[in-house]
Image 1 (spheres, rainbow, N blue to C red):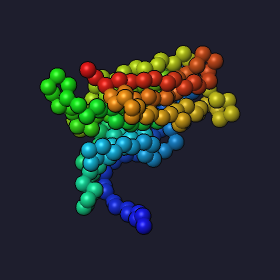
Image 2: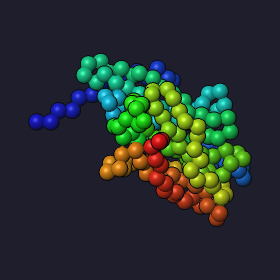
Image 3: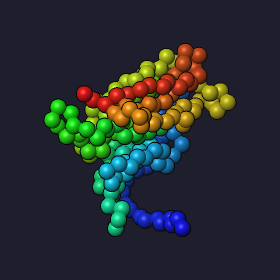
Length: 203
């Protein structure tokens, strides 16, 4: 008796196929395309993340989209670009990090989540970062979770190497406010490793 329905909503943000990300050593990192890589549903909103081109720099960065009003015409509420003046970002994930409780008399912000991702730059080895997101348009400073030791080079694919496409994140459902993330970093021998971290709710 299950029913599957599909509805169309238009994004207010034009997103684009991302370029390869830069890294030291004259090598680049694959970014594939702009498909949605992760999403979460909370408080009648869907938050989703994807790679995109940042048109002012020509770099790979992240688009965060928010959708609501699923009972009638779906509304695409907003879209936000997560970017930096030095780093390129890729392979994002998003997970709920709220606790549904009140902290020191202040209600919890709506739809709190942690967005984790891989980072790299022409002068920065590939590593792992995250931001805390809340109240629709507010972000924490970017948190560097794991710095890379070297650039990544997969000889079987040439100079444009794979890196973050096995990343993931998950809310710790028996301990709300915490999220476990897994993302790529460059190892000393030029291979990629996976760094796993527990990130906590703000106090």
